Length: 416
Image 1 (cartoon, rainbow, N blue to C red):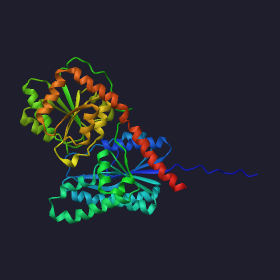
Image 2 (image 1 turned 90 degrees about the vertical axis):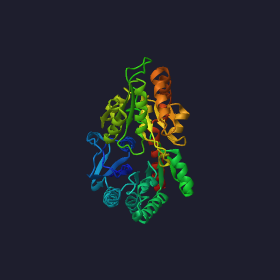
Image 3 (image 1 turned 30 degrees about the horizontal axis):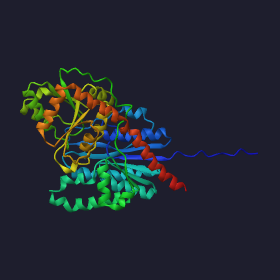
Image 4 (image 1 turned 135 degrees about the vertical axis):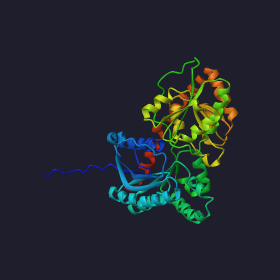
């Protein structure tokens, strides 16, 4: 009797696509890397496809972390070549569209069942969508920021208005035709559903959350007053964030002889920050730490007293719910949010008591809030306890499980 060969079932292939060169030290990469690693552990065959980026006319270039590649459970495929022209968003957009076609060729070689496209950048929507249709793969658009944010810079440029209107319509049509859309904030889910009611059946809330195994408290907060009260901000860009109001608050506190320092981390350009600090006479109250590894980032956050998230009074950022917000809280670091009251991040701070909310651009409120916590350590400890109580509800594992549930639904439908 001949032995019967049993074909082992193949693990489903999932491809994450992002128009940024990975790996890099940033929130977008931490989100994708966590999901890719988690899905790999759940027996999915996971790939990450991204472009090799050549930066032109850029003062600051996002740093990359080559260590991730060696220890990853998934495969990273880097596709040449995307040109990023920092002084010309329009040219960069054109290069992104062209590069998306090259990424599409790689997708044909992998033949995935599901493609997860991480946006922004947005110009990959059309190319990846076309590839997904030809491959008959399910497309999930992981939307971290609204598409309209990318068109704000073109509004005053009359020559580009018609072209940008066509591109915007095409990108929204991809959302309309995608199999699922995952959003990082409730307000984005709500507004997209209202704008296009058809989308409400396939939009899912998959928050950023935080990796609680990496971002965690390392020490207890002591009730004694510190020699220096340390504020903290991290990011690879100052776009959307109004650190000017924090500098003005520092100037106010310095006049009252309070020893407060702002620590800034990330691959941002610190020159404008130092220039304004010099004008306000608080240059010695700023410390730029540069781009940090995740371990060093956690260590620094545990040495500071209060994180700051100061927004402009600009409705375009109302959806902002950055990964750094969750990571601050996961480390037991309260957050001072300066934003309009309808911003989702402001609502979370007020509802859960994980920090302090001040109206946007209200220097007096920011300064007084810092002063109160500086002088009354017990108030700060109450905020820390609130963060630690809220910690389990922001576990990124919950978001990964939700993504898996969506993917399994597609795969099960395909096998019926």
